[in-house]
Image (tube, rainbow, N blue to C red; front, side, top):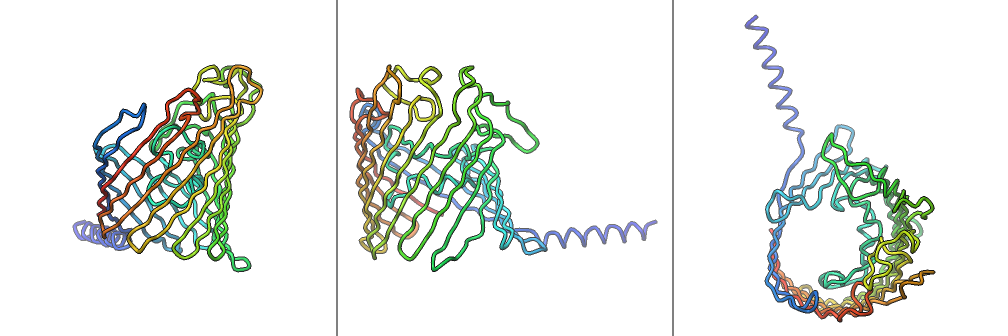
Length: 355
């Protein structure tokens, strides 16, 4: 009996050692940012802010050659998870991913795609319909990224995302979320083509509206975008077009009689154009200028009017190894698609440290 126990324990130890030897790798990285910002809501903000992120990343390889990767990004208090991702890459068959907080989604690659030195223009305030496109896929979705394809000198990348319940609720391992009577299934498709210095792409998404305000005849929500970026040495230019239709009528939508509009819950639809130019002064410094014009179209509503939100942003960034200094000056007229709102003028300078 003693000998059998010894043999069994030895075999168990050997198997554990084998598993450990084949285990994936884990790494930790992060960043810290200090910002000085003035302007913002009602142009009254004047504050110093701090932000720290810690990212845990893991990767490994299976016996069949497939690989896997995971990450968890936490915020200041470490206990708050910003995004997670689990991705299995199946060689020439592409990859499948699951995540929260935009950790794996397809739509994230089509959010304000135009070249810039620092932040998205919408970071300054107001709303941007571009940020709404496909945002339901940030959580509770299955994502498939197809294998890259080469055709006539061009590289084509594409991805699909699907959600059984296209809301924003998430669930832990083995958990569930409350059934949504607002949204049903969601679908998204993105395609990007790169040819030499030109990159073009398009993304479309649709999700079922269900029992919105107890009205059965609402339409499904649809949104989409396309973009084109071109680089000429140190200069990059870009253009993006967006469209968002929440599928709601004036009778079922929120905010139809108020001045401010909310993307996704107001009736009518939103469409916009963005363009930018960026210049790499040298390997460490870049500057950019962007303009965005987004219009709320009230459609057939008789209680509200069309309104256009205009934004322009001048940005600069300078890097010194692991440290960077970035700044922007952004102005937004008719913020939140409110014709009576005061123009926002926001300035921010940030010191960033990466490790």
